[in-house]
Image (tube, rainbow over the protein chains, first blue to last red):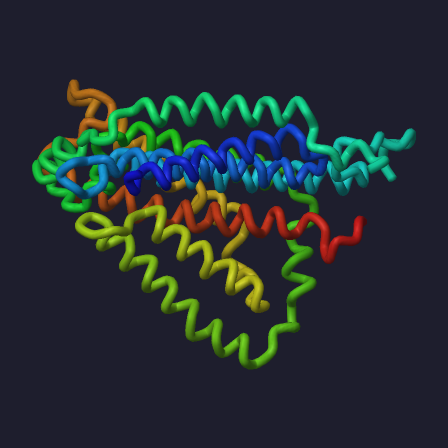
Length: 106
Length: 230
């Protein structure tokens, strides 16, 4: 088993784990974290697959793509957390199981 | 066992397993060796004068990706800033709480971090580093300053912060559009000034990225002080 496959398999596992969390978890912050898991999985896959060159040395294109992706993930996380936080201050609800109270603004 | 929430939900489990199988199969089907674009990129980077291949890919060969990425970061910052409730709450809560050790450490660390940020941008053309790394360090320096009780200086009003936030994107768009006036195409840097232009964009991007990270942190930290709801 080659080294690149270890990283790639780890990335695939992380991505599947993130998919489960995003769908199954009810808490809103858990969902944001799960989306982060999926992103990290994609990065691991890209970095792993970029390291298959026979001459040795990684392919710089996936590395640049991951660097771009990290910044986009930071933006996604910050926006997600801000929306969750605003929703919580507005309704007092932090998950998908609670019903909004009749008055709305508690 | 009574609470259905604690069982692994069937549908997400199926979806997750399906993803695992599909992506795993796709990955295993790829050939174990592939040289990708490493050789082309190394030659191209030599020709462009940017010795660090990743920087050359980010700002030269795939400049469009980076341009859109900065736009995404900017949009997210604008959205988060418009969602915040009380911008000054965090500063008020922290003000005057930092002890002498934290203060002394911050006074030593903050200038060093700004220096490191500048260094990362400068070496970005030949070694690992660049605008994003520099911007992250710069943003962290700002967060450190705010968390250890240094309030925003009076001149850092909303207007200036917004200009710093957008100057990177504006400069990048300007440099990207400039060759089109001479009949070139988008992001086709003129060969003789390529390195200078890339450095110019990188420096302004560093400022914008640092300001973005600081704004994202402050805006999401200030919404509710200490967890109690207003």
